[in-house]
Image (tube, rainbow, N blue to C red; front, side, top):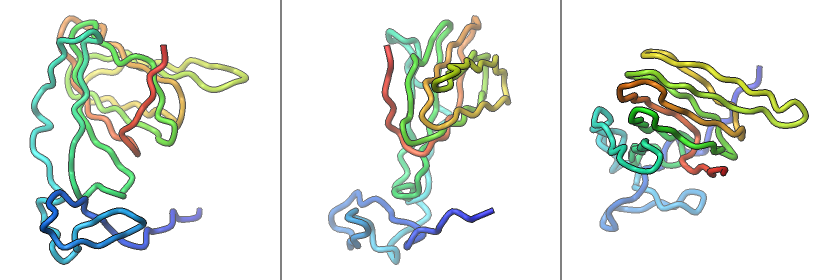
Length: 162
């Protein structure tokens, strides 16, 4: 099985302070690797629930870790109020994995033509569901309590469908 090619640089810490020494890599501004610290690869607060008082009854909290820049990974937390939802959307260039931390979540995705098959599953605490790249997917909290999840994807942008 062929291995995914390694990048030219192992990491490119996003530059947050213009006083840091800079290195340019593939057109991106990066912190000089000699100045990188453990804090550039750390985030605290994923245990804090997001505000679900909105039209969808859900909240996505993205994790901002400067060291994830150019690594092709996004981490976040999704909170759902009772009957909250993540409306149908796609990630054009990324798969997604959802890990339920608390509560129950109904998730699914639809395959592309010609079959347009619907794959759904009810997830409980500790369950994981994988969503293939570029497919329309959704999540609905059908329980009477809050639901929280961690999600992992290649990139943060999604496109909502109506």
